[in-house]
Length: 200
Image (cartoon, rainbow, N blue to C red):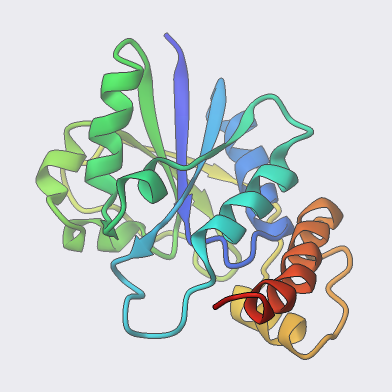
């Protein structure tokens, strides 16, 4: 049976830590594909900070994963609009891939909170949870009733918020954000002022 990994996130910006998680999951969980599902409006973060335009975040993920056939950028949540809930995305993916096993890829820092997720009881019955153990947070357990597979991986512990601060300050993020994604970011921000000046 085809196994498809669902790796959701804001990816603001995507960085080498995200790619390391996806690569480790693809290998360790025997996934045929890993979908990078870019959140439109992540419900956990709405109102907490300004989220970068979803079109830019998606374009950066597309660029960063373009060299791997098994890592695929997904715009499902952006296309759907509104708040991004994993259970809605899983329902869509079940319709698209009716014969596949869906594996929800999460870090050990969030697995214990799965029972707080929107319609978690329905989500629990639709997916296997693939837990990637992260530095300093080993051993967190999923709530009872979830089907779980665990892998350990040498992960890169990076902060997206720190990378956003460095980008905003014009400081280098070389080797932290993939060059292909960084090129998209720089092109976007080079063209944005011109577009704004030409607006009515």
